[in-house]
Structure formats: structure tokens, C-alpha cells
Length: 295
Image 1 (cartoon, rainbow, N blue to C red):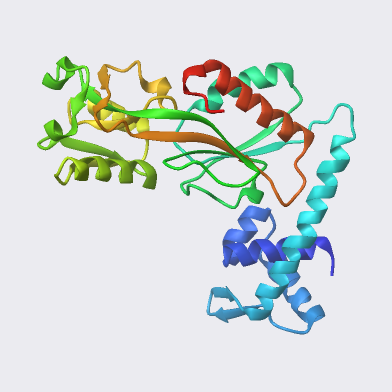
Image 2: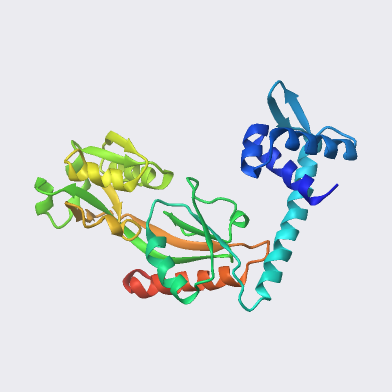
């Protein structure tokens, strides 16, 4: 048994598809299949139940995956810690952004100006809270602040109402939710804003009429600009879209909010570069948005 076999097995186990796993690993499917078969032969048991072209991890496979994750995780930790001993370390930082935002496009250039050797792997996820140890850093925007000693809530942002320019409700400084009962809503994919929209409308005593569902804030804002409806607009995380031809107004009496937070690896080694970026991100956000900062 060697580390390559464990890495191949782990990828197959998580993909549960040989073709997909071979694509992720950049190896041929026959090479991958032979590696898994050799591992099964060495261990003396099958690790997958096979149904035609489909494979499903069995009980023995789940046990092997548990230990493979630990072994390979320790190897990754060792490599990260050894890299930190180098004075010109260029250890990569993996970042998961669990919200549709352009916050990183503001922050990364400023960070890399002082840290030009640091490389980033950035991934946008749909889930609100993925396994924190899958990434060095996770950036979240949610209705509730995260718990745990490996997370910090940085800002509390307002959720405003975005209206087309010229809409009659633009004349108001604050818009009562009840005035939106006959409006068409544009809903952005994601559990957090969907729940907030439902709760705001429920408080006002009506069910929202959702005319459009889209997966990106920029599309929702374009639809508002075209006069197709109204949408909820997180003030900070969508700030780069605020220059569009639309009006932003607080919702009268409700003041919905979201929390912008950062979390980091807890159970595995966090590199010096990741620690440096974490601290930079917190300080940057609090400096740019002091009125929204939390102690």
C-alpha cells in the first residue's frame, strides 16, 4: 500500500464514479481501476459494491476512507508546516466563499501587494457551512453568526430593498413591507436570502409573488434595473452592484440583517500564509466598514 493508492481510492470514494475520479486525478481510467483493485487485494476485501458501471462505497470502504482521510490529512499538514519553515514560502491558501459576493476582488489585490508570493485557490460553494477543514479559510454571509473558536463574526450588514428607478415607492425613505404585496419579487438562489424574503413577507401578512429565480446577484440586479421586479439587497456583500440604475431603501420596521464572518481550519494545521490572510481580511473589513463592525 502506498500514498498514491490511498489518494486514488479517496477520490474514487468521494466521486463514486471512475470516469469522474480519473478526470479529477488526470490519470487514465484503467490505471485508476487497477490501483483500486490492488488496494482491495492487499487489504483482502472489496471496498465498493459494484452495480454495472455504478460503484458505491461499502462498509469496509467507509472504514478505509476514514483512515485514508487521516493519513493523507497528516501528510498535507506535514507539507504545509515544512513549507512554513522556508523564508520565502509560497504555500497556497484555499478559500471557500459561501455567498455570492465580490468581497475578495477588493481584498486580494491589497493582500498580494504585500505578499506577492502567496497563491490562492478560490472556490464558491452553495452550502452555507461546508466542512471547515476542507479549506484553509471560509467566508460566510448568513442570518446567524457562526459558533466555535475557529470562527469570527466581523460585520453585521443591512439587507435593503432594491427598486427600479422611478418606482413610486422610491419616493419613500423607508418602504413598508405591506406596500410590496402586489409587487413581483426576484429571488436569488441560496437558503439565506430566500428565508429572509419569506419571513419579511410573512410578517407583513402576505405570500411573495416570485416572478424570477436566478443564481447570481448581478442577474437579479439587472432584472430590477429593467423594471421586472424588486429584490432584497445585502448592503455590503453586494456593494459592487450598488451603482446600477436602481434605488436602495431600508424596509420599514423590520431591518433584516446578515452577518459576515470568517472561519478557518480547526483540526488540521493552518499555514502561516492562511493565518496572515485571515488577520488581514478581518482588519481590512473592519477598517473599510467601521460602522458595521462587531467587537
